[in-house]
Image (cartoon, rainbow, N blue to C red; front, side, top):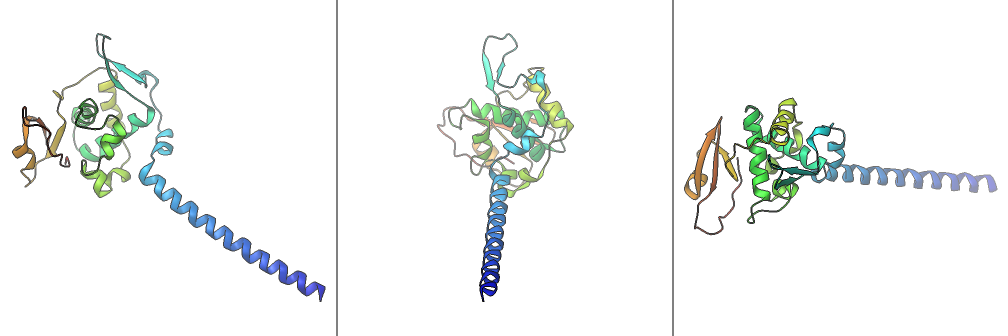
Length: 202
């Protein structure tokens, strides 16, 4: 009789442990999925960051003014948005996408950080449609960041918006066109019109 009770107790304990393990596995899977969508810090840690990028503080060519503050995650996020938005563009085209993000961090009408600018709702199409999370930066994205951080190149003229050619006329109707590079058209807000209603870049 005692043996039966012990056996029953073992079975119940075993089933409880299995249920607990399944619950933990499900919880971990959900957490991992959420992390993949909202936190790229783990992913960026496996990407080598060049020591000569001087992550932290980036000054102007004459070293008199602070241009940007960077973290390793910021550098990786810039590469990802460049890959998602400008995979088919040349090195300067990818750098221009990064610079549009950086220009927004210096504009009072936009968030202050690279992460907040990229994930601001309704701003960058690849973030909204999920492409941003799927792409992996290639060597040309790293070269584009080198262009900005090492050579202090900035051909953006302060542009804060860009789009690919499409049927939409929102950008040309609401913004000041600046220049075209590759398949992207770059814009800034028109002077004297107050705060523009931000629409997603393409």
